[in-house]
Length: 434
RNA sequence: GCGGCUUUAGCUCAACUGGUUAGAGCGCAGGACUGUGACUCCUGAGGUUACCGGUUCGAUCCCGGUAAGCCGCCCCA
Image (cartoon, rainbow, N blue to C red; front, side, top):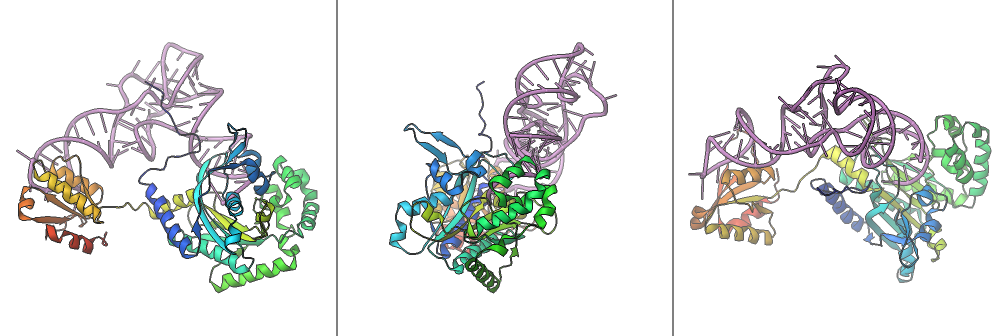
């Protein structure tokens, strides 16, 4: 016996029937994002390590300890992308897109890689769907992007996703605010865990979304960044809220929402799954989408001064929710054709292929076998209709087609359709899957 | 990275305080019914009890290690 292999920890096979959920979600995304004016881009899985160090931030966990980094044969430091914003920005700059159009709206979907401790909905190879809008400073751009997320959750059928909103300001007032925060948390240094102390030193704002029990009181009384941001950002944020209300998109102001990546400025938001009743299938990993404005990133990466807003959604979590909430809707053939031994079998097979090539969902059992078995198979794949094709049908040029979606015990329903009339008949049936 | 829990058939789970052919339901395969599914009945296949080691006359059960999965922290989508 030779050794059997298992997928690398944290990386999963996506197989039928679950894959159908992925395809459905991705299909909805392509249509909806397209309608919002966003075009798809695909960037490489790996990038120069320095790209992520510069954009995501050297002290973040993502860059500090979670990247899959290696030296390639040309002695370059390469990293598998841990997120999609930096690669998109790199592509935007490298291809000089800003020179060809003043406003650019992109979306991407694909695998990202982070070496993390696994949990439900959190894997080392995970899938993100993200959007980036470059070139508009106007609050309308923030709101367009948020509206896109909002509508997307609606269309894929995931309710109870709550929009949390905050603003981090344009950065000019941040040093002063950080000083204020440090003052505030100073008396609590003794009760902090080592991790929290580290955060205090390196990334003080992160303390605001810590779940440490000893810090909850300190967090509740901490100064809000919203109170110390610059006037321009305040006005911007007010406009964003006004527009959201106009669009009927509910939101909650969340002063603790700071987000981890260094590049965020002004508006930041998260969509968090918060079911009103019952268990939360995602536990504490309820953030299903995170995003915001990053007006300086493009310039900091060597590009032109271009403001930008974007977000990234974790598809793994959404698939989990859709599966739990709606189950899996399998694609099913409209018509299943049973075959027999004998010369007419070739004609039956030819008929199946012809109908398929004309655009109909028609299936058969390539193993042939007994007719009851074939009909059982038709039932298993949830075919809507079943017809045998043998010598009788071949000479009569007519199929007797049984309805396979009757309630158990209901009287049989059989229709006779001439072979020539099959395409027309299928056309009338193909849009009625129970 | 830290703390805790878990792992038995393809799936969901059993097996008294360690006791010798590890069971069930679902699913899968075949038959009852050689040209018509579902319901019913019968039959069958499928397990080194995650892996490695220890204690014991004897381990699915107790102990240790490893791996994978789950919960919380951390982090984040």
